[in-house]
Length: 430
Image 1: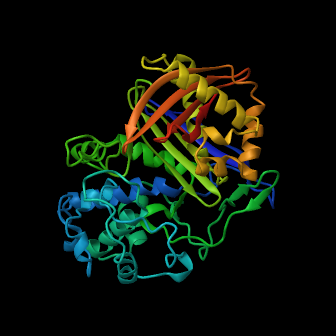
Image 2: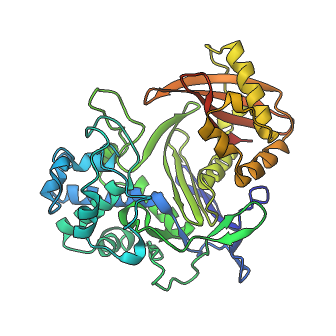
């Protein structure tokens, strides 16, 4: 927390159904020096998606929604281009519907209706054929929230409270909308090179995609409900945690509201969340039966997952970067090329001839330079160990463990068709 300037965090660790640890760290409010406690309310961002998915699946259990039914059966005035989109496509980010995040007209302050949301999104063409691939889309989960409304006859949050939050005892879980007075609500912050700032107040209307707030105690109750068979039936949970099958028969890394992956031989079902000023994560390492939940009030991208991964290594040592085996298929020339480029980047003396213009701009911003300085304090990167390559949407991604004096780091690289580095991302360090 000190190294990454995290104001506050609440964490929980559940092992084999037993609560191993629950604790608050740091401050929920820098202004009032209010400490984080088990009652501190944080925005959970896209962790909300698994709850929206659960709401849909409850309606599936009720016989009111079909996973493979077209969404036009449940939503009014949908465009013709959406005719092939099913509920399952929305849940798995395979609909092709453009994500509205970043588009104008979807600000929370506008408080747009379902009809307005669909009308504003309709002119944007599908980005791909439904079921063809996975592209993360907040639009899909807002549309799912509207399906909950049309099929239940209740407002989204009213349904969620009635069918999920109250029955599970999650009495402190609700809506992030600033108009509501929420006792013990944590303040969200951003770190700007050398100081804290308040989070951007021009919020996007995230609704079913990321509008939920919760406490660490309520998130523990959520995890307990997922472990039982009363809230969701066993067959429903199997459906939820099964990777989507693309049109070509290949498997996605996403189920229904959850990411599903293999991390160093450990099956991980989880999700992270990010909103302005906040980061969250729930990571369920199912083979080890360990769940780590993190809520934080720093908006740095990926911070919730970074904390959760670090905590998990305390309980599952084999997750450590030290235990990753070197893979076959490394290229000595590529290794040396990447090592030199990485060293130059960390020293804030990037070699433009090795990088795409887009990457060069990204790693020379004032904020990126400050991050490079922080990484530079780990010591000189002496060696890269190749651990694997994968192809994602026709792009080759290479992963290497970098050995420095004080840390091990996991880096992700991509090269363009001219052999220049188009991506250089630090995924993890320890």
